[in-house]
Length: 345
Image (cartoon, rainbow, N blue to C red; front, side, top):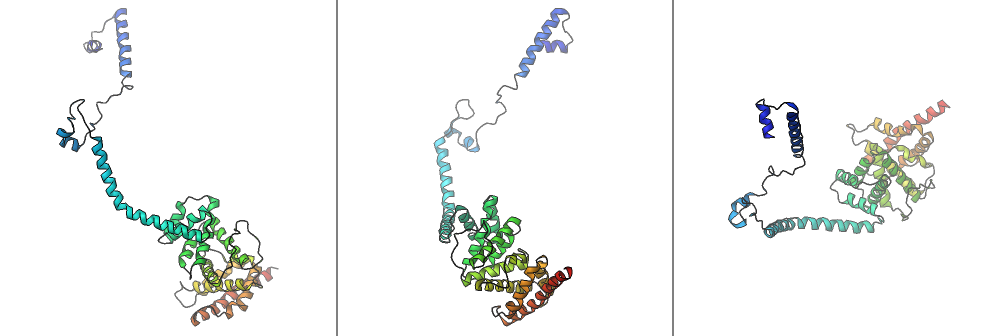
């Protein structure tokens, strides 16, 4: 091959048949040799597998620069790694122990709260172990629940909210965030309708509502849930039309108190963000959501007049005055709805 290259360089290529045969033979041989380079395992460019410690301790750990004389104390390396892992393990032991203890306590509480499936227990632990509602929402998303399993989230939130000793706005903030999903928003609506049934209302049975929660709702639970759902309606998380399933002119005692507290919460919460003492536009906006439900508007107007305007559970005297004023504004908006229906007829 080298001879052929030199001949080509010096322009001394053989002519004739013999020359062409020799040239073709060399060309074939060169192609085979060059083509074999891709299949060869060339290790000349690989780095030496030594470290600074090998160089410093070459008299103890073997003469690494001689072929076949390299020596590595694998037992010593294993001991060093074990020592590092042990020191790290001692550092992380306390934190991991605390996390495991907290998770175990929450799982025990979840069973006591009748979280009878793994999905519900996982949701419960995610909600109760979070630092705030944003952290809780992120933890719920990290559970990677299926679409059908996500419907358990509103049920667990409602259960936790009603089990508190007093109203906790944490669950309302979390519910407001969860209601950004349309399907979960509907699940909250179905949970509310399930509460109506447990209060004795003869509304339609929903297939997604579980039958295992048969205990009666006490007044503490009614207050907590009424404030949560009232705030959700006032902030736009849920629509006022969630009340369309009820006959507001005839309600069971517990349902009457529940709806009364919801309306009171709506009116009082609608005034929190106002710069003036009275924000009529905000109240009108909320109650005008019944514009496409004239029958509900009639029942709600009756309920405002007969129950909410005469309430004595609004709180302070200032709150009572605000509620009475809000009732008048809401009734005016509902009057406009019923009047427009009569005109259209």
